[in-house]
Image (cartoon, rainbow, N blue to C red; front, side):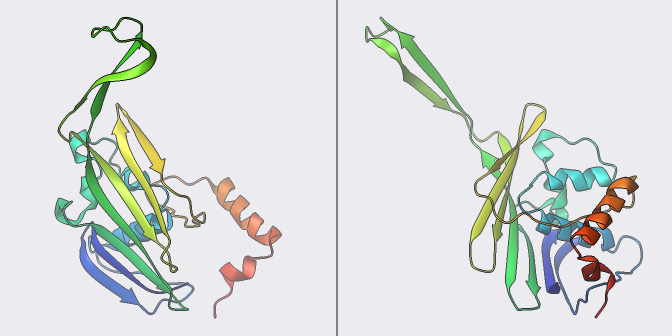
Length: 213
């Protein structure tokens, strides 16, 4: 359970910190003050192994398309990708964990391979051999997630566009996150929700959800 959370450079939040959380918390406010953005930030924080969640929260808002050069730029406050997004939370025991989100440029290299005998320079190319390589200027962006747990262990993941598909690369795996975000604009599968509640009953964990301190 959270004791405090802090959000920097995400959506409408330049820098905000909140504390005093209990098991059940009610977040209220006028329209466009950041209620949904706060929940989105917490969901990204829990899903630190899946950088595609940045695209998912846009879909929840009805944004289905984006330009390659704007890949996830809109989740940054004022679209400023020079300032990283930082999402951190401290639990009741005082342990803090932080997710840092950045957009970096990817360089693209073209490698020309030679094989077979009698290459252009007369060498034996029966084994594959790199005969030249060209590196272009940075032309693509990738989103990088860097999560640091309470012990200082880092878990990294990154997402980038390849053609019309989003590719994800995980550098290391940590503990599977457990956050669930039920977006208001998205139709819910109540059978799945009922199954989740049933699983809690089977594992005798209902009290964790329904009992307040």
